[in-house]
Image 1 (spheres, helix red, strand yellow):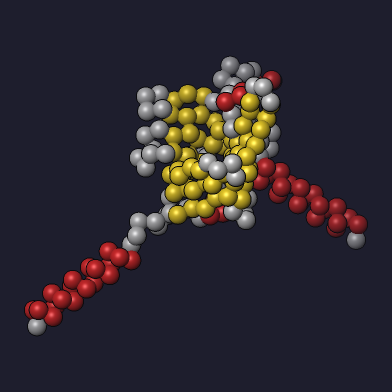
Image 2: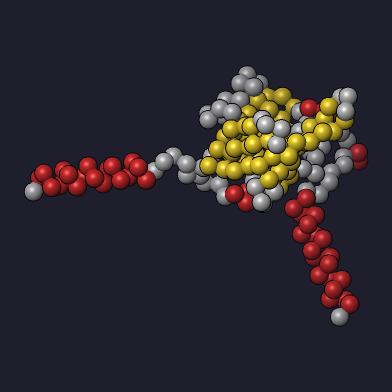
Length: 169
């Protein structure tokens, strides 16, 4: 009886170890779909802001394609299209120019996307939804300009269209 119990215990442990391949993720694919622009980074010693030509943008589309946009001082804004996929907490990006990225991803308390090449997030870059601008630290309240994030603008647009269609009835 004890041999059967031990054999059964070994079988259960083996099944549990092979069924958990480490690719489980608390995130949904829909969380990453959208437009993200770099906001700030951490290089292992200190945080640094990304401003001006250092800002890059990722557009992740629901059909697992996307566009990476960056600024070149000689040519202006340039972009590279890519295919993407997630495997648990890993984001794989295959650029159409032949390059690729294997990144770990997560989200901070504000819902901003965090991308890192290190599984411990020792070095990372934080991306905010494109269109969102935090006021400058030294800006007066009268000169602060903010734009509505894309997802809120889309909801507002749908509400306006619904109101117009009701008036036309």
